[in-house]
Length: 230
Image (cartoon, rainbow, N blue to C red; front, side, top):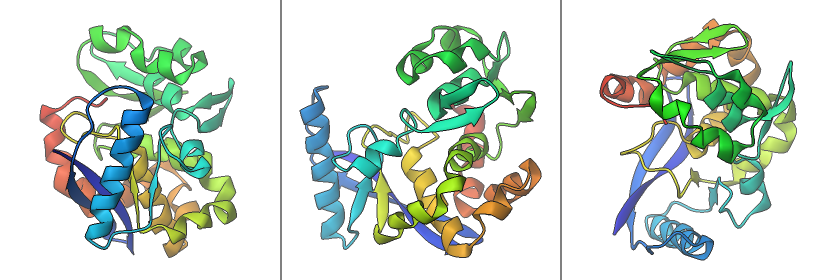
């Protein structure tokens, strides 16, 4: 058995995202077919609890929309051209003994995530994105900002997400990671429902104030001191 979270958009300024853990039968193995079986098992278990329809947001998604919204596929415009969210995030990390390693920006998402320097440069201190500094707390702020900035120009298209009751990422394990593209999609829908996405992205200060007020970050920010951002 395994447990994975379902992230749902609440649309309340003080409670933007709800996290619901779901236990289901796990299919072991690394083959893509096994991961897709796990997505189906997770969604079926969630449906038994009345949470459906769901969108898997990852490269393992059966839906094209979910694949396109994967941080490995989603691109953000920068001064060096379009780069993936994953490469932007990894290349902006600042460690005690190095970084940001901006050459990672030009790597594909898989190579960016696996770059050895990310494991050998000491503890993570924050982020530096083209000179803009981001703190570690609120814990998901920088990742969420990158993701939502890339999607902000497509608000009408993104209203398709309103039909889903929740979002999943079968690769996300809350015991090992902090950032989750499925959670950020739920955050996106909440902000769209509130008509607040553009306002939230107006400035870094506005965005940090917004995510800091969310109960998800309030409840989990203390954990950051004992965990490593992946």
